[in-house]
Length: 128
Image (cartoon, rainbow, N blue to C red):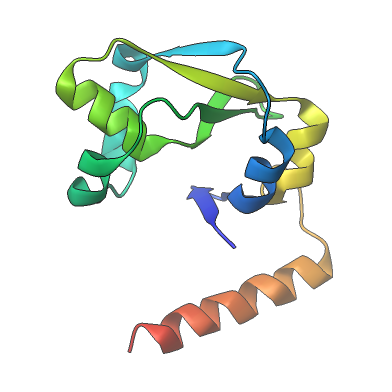
């Protein structure tokens, strides 16, 4: 499962990609507006150099208001680096965003906390 985390929020990107598969991008991301947020994201420069800018970003409308890129930060980084001004984006509906959100926005269910704790233990064990 591919995930994206921003502060206390976490999304299942595998699910987001399944939901948006085949959907025509309905939005445009102005790269300059989002470039400042790249400092908050861990970017693998080698991976960013190889990404396909024709793939649309996935953007979520978050319950606190506003939008957040949940898939496509490496594409954004490459676009900013080479001077591409806009990227296409697929915008999740509120229902789709909630279906992909693992945690954040409200208290997760007890099962979700247990799953996250198990995942964190695996991450720690895997990094040793």
